[in-house]
Length: 276
Image (cartoon, rainbow, N blue to C red; front, side):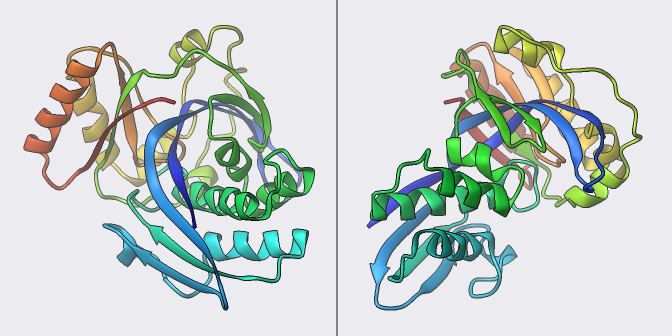
């Protein structure tokens, strides 16, 4: 049995540089990952099975098309694995929330199957499986801080952010990535920074935040609430939303902010964690 944490993904900066002829967008982003996420358990079995538990299980179809089963099938086709697998997904992250839940689940599936079959995580065929499953899946396979270019799949790992306290907040609203990208205004506001990742994060932006806020005005309230907390050095929306995050000077202030927001907004999802 193999267990993998499908860590939540944050875009500390997300610069959209232009539309590509293939329908995708040219991106420059600073990926970061947190300690917590969904939990995936994979065991060899006589035949395939897939089940979902956890607080967000009801939002997904347990036995139909899913990025987890697609990842299993891609791995099987690439590596000739004919065994059955029992897969259990403990869905702890909200769906369609800008923190890579489905992509992280797919990546965790690939990592688990690779561990069972003795496949290296940098095997080119495994990387090809991740790339075919979605633009964020290669970054989630790596699950460490990196600059992403292209569709986000061209990755350059960077160091220097591990251990920073982070608070993730979602107002309980799902946002369509496609709908947000379709409302991007097409203006190239310049490249992502270079050098120290702390400064890259501070001086960056999320070009998808304005269209996401148009689609989900609840994001405004989340950002405003995070901005009011003591000890934050950056507040931003992640990905295409609606999850927003704050990075803190120290853990005590992060804990205090989490308590304040949970008390004021009991219907919001709130995760106190740290960057890895």
